[in-house]
Image (cartoon, rainbow, N blue to C red; front, side, top):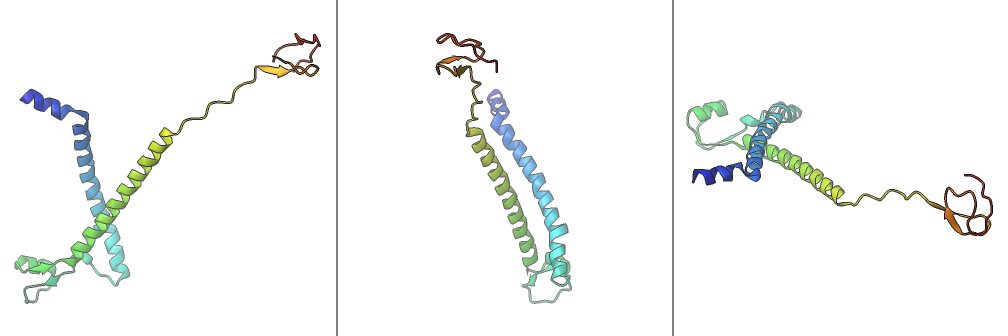
Length: 151
């Protein structure tokens, strides 16, 4: 059973999947940082210094100074600012995946197209006197015995 499990794990597509998951997780963290540390603060500044991560609706009916205070007190909150950040994360990841898939599909299409054959180098020429096809290096026509100029 362990031998069979080892074969399963060592198959190429299982390893590819593991690498993809690890890289995807790292990419997700990069996108989260981009959204939380670069994009949302910029949007918040444009909208009058709004910090989206702190936007919430208090469902408990009591007043709290901040989202952190409401969470500390265990109050029920609707954290719509965090939800907005998550939606932007998703849109960025989806767009990047779209670009990767598009590039991959274009590369596959390019690989399917046959490469054009190189132009054939002529091996014959016509005799200027009798119009018979003769070898390109011939200096005398074998049919009409005319002397041909070189070139």
